[in-house]
Image (cartoon, rainbow, N blue to C red):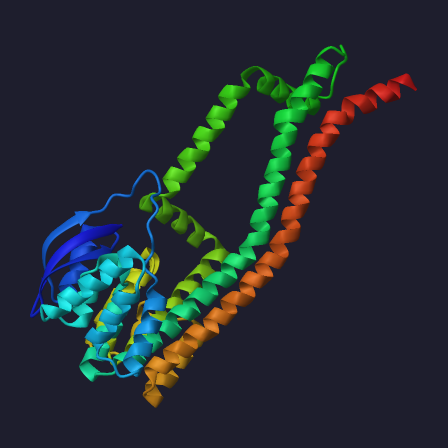
Amino acid sequence: MRYRVKALYPGTGVTATTVEAIDETEARARLQRDGAQVLSIVAQRGNWLPTHRTRFPLVLFTQELIALLDAGLTLTEALETLGEKESRTESRQLIERLLAAMREGRPFSTALTMQGAAFPPLYAATVRAAESTGNLSPALARYVGYQNQIDTVKKKVVSASIYPMLLIGVGTLVIGFLLVYVVPRFAAVYADAGRELPWMSRMLLAWGGAIETHGVWIVVGAATAVSGVVLALAQPATRAAVTRLAWRIPAIGEHLRTFELARFYRSLGMLLIGGIPIVSALGMVSGLLSVHLRSGAGTAMDAIRRGESISAAFAHGELTTPVAARLLRVGEKSGRMGEMMERIAVFHDEEMARWVDWFTRLFEPLLMVFIGLTIGLVVVLLYMPIFDLAGSIQ
């Protein structure tokens, strides 16, 4: 759930931000771990209907900012240049708010945090780490690379889902046409035939009669049911329940865990390369994990504070796979833990891509067979009385 928070940060003053958390207690605990004193926290309720809102082009903004910084402009000059060239009113106002916060003496990372959901916490954390070293441009380039890799994985999953969803949509339309238009007409013809029909044909034609008599109410009921499902899925609690159900499915749940861990390792590796300590980095990226794994991040942080190694701490928090556990131990020996975590993420991303490809190759023919059998069954039940009539005439 999303919470709108006003908090007092030492040395930076009062800051308004948005926090994603399971409940208010977790949101307060996360801010207090960052050293903030919470002044107010209000839950943001989801709207019943979706609203159109222009999304801030974060990756494009970052790429242009890197180019201007590499050209020799200061950060303030680069932001002023981006604000002057920006044609979208919302984006220009956002950049102006950044500049206003920086002119008040706030660090760039704090100014980013004050803008709410426009800049993810991971983005602000990357900038905060770069401020201590003075290497802002390379840090932003790492974030752009990270975001491009995440987007690539998402595009693979979406592209693999397009054809099955198309099959489901076309199959649903064909079956709906048969049940709503064709079956009622056959029902009217067979009603005057005066012949005994097979049981399954009678059931199908009874449905056709119901459509003919109460078609409007059935359509209204179906539309209401679909709207209820859509609105329910728009609520965080419902989505969380669906996620918990998916995690209980043996094969799918394991791959969902691998996908989340890959994103977790990639984010954590980027922060470690940027110079953020492991405990602070874990606190920043724990919000990327689902409820099932988020408690494991807290367990790992406590174990690291007690002096345990990173590999052992992650094992206690159940944040490893067999491959990740071995590579973490290699990273501890070489001292290049950030790079090793990115390699873990790459390995699991490739594994996930192979599984998605295999699953779609298996699911598509099974889906086609199911849709074909369903349509065939409806057609056979409709024509079965005609076959009986033809047999009796012979």
